[in-house]
Amino acid sequence: MPDIRSAWLYADSVSEQRQITLAALGSFENLVALAKDEIVHVRVRACQGRESGLTQCIQPIFSFELPNAGDPLFNGPYGYRAQYWQSPLDGLKANAALIAALTPKLLAVVDIDVEPQLAKINVCSSLRATSAKFWMQEIPSLLLSPTHDLNVKRWCDEAQQGIHLAQWGLSAPEVQKFEIKGALIDPYGNEVVPTRKIFRHFDIHHYGFS
Image (cartoon, rainbow, N blue to C red):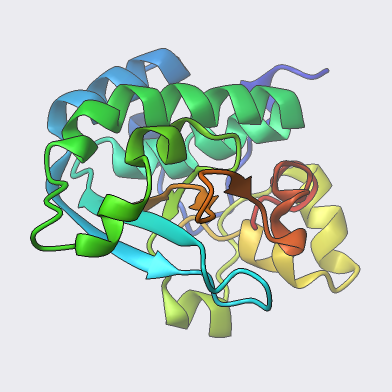
């Protein structure tokens, strides 16, 4: 496997100074530590499953900001997507490590008087489940008109084939707002994974987006 710094390349739209900043912390572990220290504006809401057969399931969705860690965590050569680029398994491990590090501050905002639906599930179990996931908050303009900021070969090759996920994966928006979505939990306490999300780790590996 090629060295991540030699393979994680940027287009001209990403300035040299920003590239330096994106790589400055030098490891995923350092990025997680920064995220844990600086996470702010944490909120939680309870959502019901939308797909057929999942409407009785509950999912906690946490939103928050990472003012300094966000950009390198999402777009840097040692960041979250770069872990999936290395391998789907590395991505899953990174996802679990990041969520575990942030969990205490996520749980601190859970208030069942405000979100009574959360009393129906074990929020800790939802966050520990395999299908819990971290991602940036959706940017509608990015989905409509993706920018080409990354020159990661695998994703470029897929984008040239017209794969929308890869076209989105080549974007590197300077994001600060993120979400952690816990697993969908059914009325019996079981994790339920929508079919289209089963292969999320492979999607990010192949395309850079999910």
